[in-house]
Length: 443
Ligand code: NDP
Ligand code: 2IT
Figure (cartoon, rainbow, N blue to C red):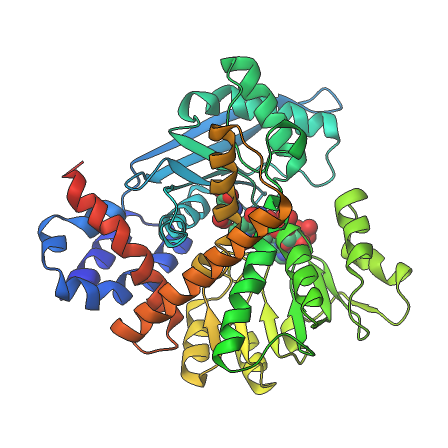
């Protein structure tokens, strides 16, 4: 049995009941074999056995009192997966579906993604099964403060720097940062995604979505085409979806859809992004409300956006939102490219369909790395006490996404096939972490 298949088998056995973690292991490990064949020293140093085991995992009680005076208890997590190339870095997710499994899959992906950015950040992820939906600001604040009452002792500007993810935006970052400051007395860059008025970076809010489209632009360029006139289908209607749609529209595409966990809207005239921002960012409403603002748009509470014929598909909601049947529908409708805004948007059988069909497909760890890349730029600005302009950060983001694309496609060509961006992203992200783990000894 090959080194990668042996470690895959052993790691699955050692971590039963973690299907999402198993899925990311199954997607990543086998693709590393060609590189490991050329570098026997990795097996001797037990690199894979070490990389699949988090350096540290913290699970903690989060008690808080809701608006009616009732005590609520949630569970908090921080998985500090790998610090070879820098402090642990990765978002926190607040969603009722969050388990240790979710945080481990996200943390594992984050190691490779952060390495691909070329910036000095290790991999980590955290979160809670808390559901911010339908909670008052006071309830969200009470939860965030309790969450930080434990998490503060595990994080820091030079050790572990959390940020947003599903259910965690500027409001939540403000509350957790405020409590961190209150407990520790430190005013520093321990969080990214902060509001601009207290140390945030311009373009961080837009970064994941814009970065996704900059990456997809490179994919389209490899087909000698552009976003101009393309029909784009977007899922989700949160931070990543909104700014992916905004940038695609700026590049001349027509964005047809947005969705949430209840249904989706289709606007044949092209979605009005400002209306979506009003509903989601200001009113914290549901995407179904869009049809009350824009005539000609339709809301569907059945079906899924992937049935809508398109040239480019940008999944921006959550993991496993594209299954085999959805992949077949996209292929049948002659979609040119699928680029993941969400982490592990696509099931393993759907990835197989994409790879068989020849449709261009980019995994999230490459295509959505713009968010964490600008987080690292926020860290740089915080520690230098400088503040860069929107244009400066946006230009750096474009450069980073172009360089990730080049790195991923060159690595794919060398170790697999030219368009195998899955192998390219996995090996490309792995190489630096592996080299540093070799240099730093068995720790
Ligand atoms: P938000 O919370 O802002 O938005 C999430 C969107 O996805 C909402 O429309 C939500 O709908 C939908 N969604 C979430 N969970 C589910 C589910 N289980 N089923 C159906 N729809 C769901 O999160 P983000 O936009 O920040 O994150 C979206 C994705 O992008 C995630 O996979 C995240 O890991 C990834 N990502 C985020 C980055 C960032 O910088 N924020 C960086 C890189 C990746 P509803 O309101 O109904 O729940
Ligand atoms: O999945 C991700 O890369 C994020 N949620 C962003 C992480 C970060 O630290 O900005």
